[in-house]
Amino acid sequence: MSVQKLPAVSADADLTAFVSRDAAGDLRTAVRERLRKLDGVTNVDEFELCGLQPGLNDLTVEVRTTLVVELDADAATGAAARRDAAALEAQLLDSFGVKEASVVSEVRDVRDV
Image 1 (tube, rainbow, N blue to C red):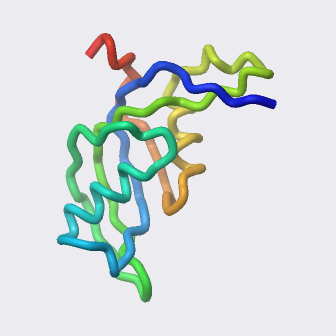
Image 2: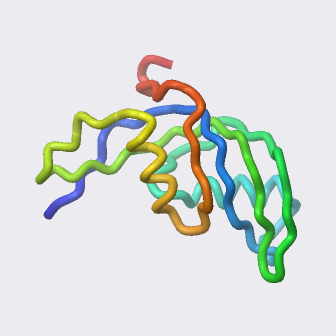
């Protein structure tokens, strides 16, 4: 089974993610770096912190963000046509450190933005 990358898409999403307490810099820098490390994310256009819950080893942050993402597609199943909110949410939820993900805008082709 092979995995291919689709052309990048952009969308606004609400995420709940875990950020390490040991992250370098301030909270905004740590959140931006966590978002950049999500599977397929190529750019974090903007983000707004909406909530924060301290934990023992990490911080749980709620963020509204605009991300540019290369969606994964399984070429064997012909899923390459799936460039929708559900596909993006599933990919974000599969990323390390993401607790919740909800796409709140239409998924847009980056070339159309």
